Image (cartoon, rainbow, N blue to C red; front, side):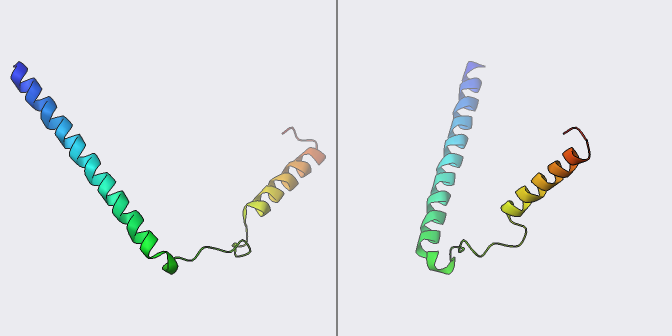
Length: 75
């Protein structure tokens, strides 16, 4: 019974080790791929944001809160 437990533990540890090794290899491979093909994935310019960016959302929240306070609602 102890032998079966040790065998199960060894198989489990080997499985986890093999999975993590494969995961590291895949991450290094994808990093090498994107590093080699970086010219195909241009960076966004700061002015190239889509309408409704985070600044617009913050302004909308401030306006909504100030309007609620003006009308006497508790925030």
